[in-house]
Length: 476
Image (cartoon, rainbow, N blue to C red; front, side, top):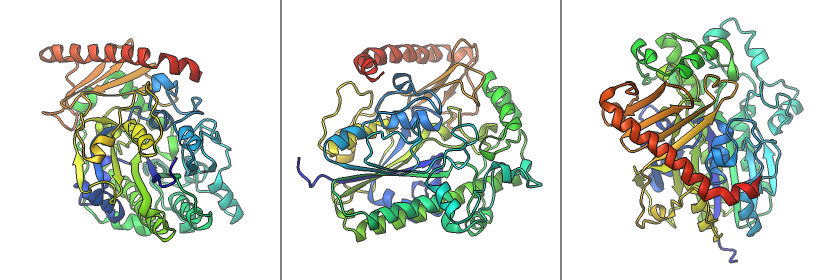
């Protein structure tokens, strides 16, 4: 195998909304380095994850199979295999710096080296797991800002998870991961071909930028979606229950408020967006380090996130819903010497469709039973057929307690969300209602469209089980 195969730098953030990159049309953002990737790269603007929480989304992304196939249906479900193993077997040196959210958290997953940094708040999952970030804080004689400390603040219940990072800036989680990635690039003897996954913990809550980044956004006029009682009344029972649950249990140091003020919502969003700008700064520094070590000229940089965050839009906290603000992700592929830049595709794709494209770039045979479909034709400028439908799913967990299983199917113009053994659901006409406010589930005028999408869910699951039967049996 030729050793001139491209280095692949895969940067993934945690819980970053699509509307957080200035070059994609969001002028309130300060993201010069992500803007560069968009302006010089290929961006898929209608790319959707396959699960609305971290581990199942990532397991799907790094295997090329839907959650019901991998069996990773919620956080902390067992996840130990990935297509990274194929890269490693083919001669790639595979390195993880930062978050992957595997379970167990230190499983190899095909990596030759892992420098694990996990969720900032690990209260329900591996609470006492001591990662690289914890070690660095301890080595400096510091106690990590975390839920026990935040709960002591007099305004904790009003903060919506937004707090100032008051320890040294370089020890904030995203600063730390970015610096560790630079350290690895600068310090490790040059090795090619390289697969380097850099997993930023932010902007997942707690939303914890240093004060100067937050102040810049606090001064801006930020868009906030109106939340009406009519919309809330039209939501399915499982989501109504989850709203109340998230106001009673402070997941990830976020006490959700059922009726937050505009000022509270604005402050939360400012802190969240400030986390994105901190990450953007580190992306630029990582690219500079790659250039100085002569990696960049032969590299493909891929940027995405594992899911979004409602940030009180639709009246909800964090993820676990199927609104586009959760399922629609930025997906950017940058390599100016290989691919014509400044191109955007609005056709539907699943986020995990990048997996077979990576394998093809690396000269690795793509397993024939993958449920992912390669994006490489579009990236290369060849003919590419978007998907007719994208899908997402999630099982009952400690937050989504009102259903055993939730499934979404989305076309270019319509979306349906199904809750197993429940008369409730969601149906949206995305052409007339792109913000997904008016639930048409019980509208008799839309009964035929509802039936059509329910039929598609059934056919999809049957196709999936047939296509992956051999692989699923072997993997288990």
